[in-house]
Amino acid sequence: MTSFKKIFMLKLILFFTGNDMFIRLLFFYFLFINTVLAADAVYIDKIPSLKGAADISDILINGYPLKCSQSENNNTCQALSLNTKGYNTIESGGQIQKFKLSKISSDHILPFTVNHQSYNLLTYPEDLPVPEITDKGSQNGLIATSFFVSHNGLKQAKQPTSYAVLMTNKGDIVFYHASIIEGYSIGDFRRHILKNGDIRYTFMQRTKPLPPYAYWYGKLIVLDENFQKINELTQIDDQPDKRLIENHDALLIEDDHYILPRYQHQLKDKNNYHEIVAVLNLQEIKDQKVIFEWKSSHYPELYDETLKECDYASGYVQDYVHFNSVVIDPKDGNLILSFRHTSTIYKIDRKTGDIIWRLGGKKDDYNLTPEQKFLFQHTASITSDGYLMLFDNQSTDMDQKCAGNFQYKKYPTSRILKFKLDEKNKKVVDFQQIQLPYLSQFMGNVFETNSGTYIVGYGSYLGMAGEEFDKDGNSLWTLKYPDTIQTYHVIKYD
Image (cartoon, rainbow, N blue to C red):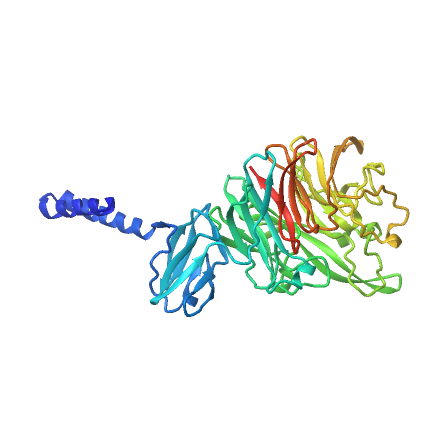
């Protein structure tokens, strides 16, 4: 007999043998509490009893329908999302129950029954690539990444694979989430710690067909600490279709306070011809109100700073800035933006929108040496020791007719660059670099971990997905996926 049953039987005996009204009231109180606790029970490695479901299509796990294949002898299902760190939910007939998983693995299969039909839930999806890990002394931590099938991989894949994944640095899957819309990619999966200490996870979900440009249209999906969806974020606009955001980066400050990017195609007259440009629009939103907005079109000098798309008479949309990261400078609260196609980092006044300074590019304020100049960079951030750090792709995407007299030194592979800036006098007071073993033509990232190491995502480079380095550039850890997969950001949380 379980402890629950023993306690219940004891209360039942007290109810029928006791003459005191207090005992009777106490009985009904405990009966109520036990009913509530039973309703909120969390099952371990077991699918709760399903009631009210007429068919497998009526079942939702973590809010999404199951993907099942049925045969005469074997009915298997996969969930769009599962996790081992929080809890999972299963919904049937309007009733929601919770269950936890001890592991997500190909050998961990949970049987369940719907309307007298038996099924098996595969906790590890068949199309989720298995990470290949090499650990050379990395501290324990969690790795967040998102990936999708490369253009070459699309020719081999039956269905495009796109996932957000949280795993241990040993490769054990803690959480996965497949794309909500089949055939559409997801990206920029990361963790946020809000001001009040609450944990949130976000990823970008594409919701429209992929345009012929290097950005998507979609929504930012917000999950709570148990990986349950609590919100979908877009910009604010009178026209719903213009609210969709682009996919490179976003900041979640609080549940009701965030910074989101999007692109607007804008037609303008210039030099007697029509130009079509992709204008970056950043909105800072708090309590459903736009409290700050920045548009690249308000700064026409940016048109001449691009190193890639400057053929404004072509009739094609010119992605002349190509935004890829935003952070808040902890020193003064202003924004630091990275624009790939100008090879420049910008500091933006968060009140006026003015450009405070430029690092790199044609109009560099810091007089960078050829060695210090970077090409088509990603993920500008501020490290714990006050350096501005970025992933220098060293891409060969430059269009010489846009570059003009821009002088630089070309390196064979991508780099980690760190700059200690004297912002008052516009000087670089210290410069550090780590030459990486691979060249990532696009995407890619570098972030500092809590233990002071550097975690790198190789973006477009196929095969090697990510790597961790100490401050001297020694490799501590590597992540490989099949060479059909491209990752968007690899981040480590200690």
